[in-house]
Length: 138
View 1 (cartoon, rainbow, N blue to C red):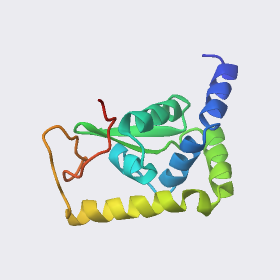
View 2: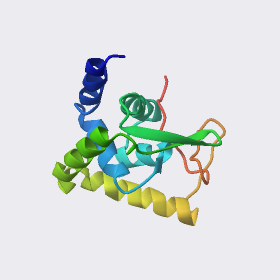
View 3: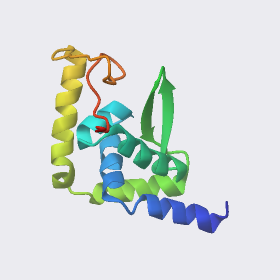
View 4: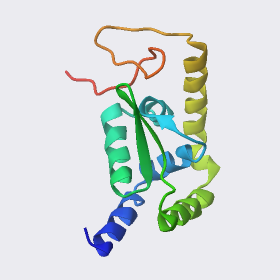
């Protein structure tokens, strides 16, 4: 990949509001895919697509724990690090206020392990069996 292509991938990854919202959420630290799904109230395949685009652009890194993947900001490249910090500081808290509220509620339930319901056909979260939103077929 040329430097030009690399740069284009970074800016393409930053050209989507959903990905900007994810970056803002990751500002506070590592999150599991199920955390991001809950925060953005979107289905897991859509979130995974956005995370993949950002990882390919070198904006985030991942860590696998069992069958779940945890994401965090990738600060290994100084250019990307400054770019991410510049973008994050310009994002209005109003843009992700609802996301942070949903994430907080989800994390609270994750820690307390309350309101847990499991169904055989339902995917569950990385830590305690909380349902994860998936694509509904049929």
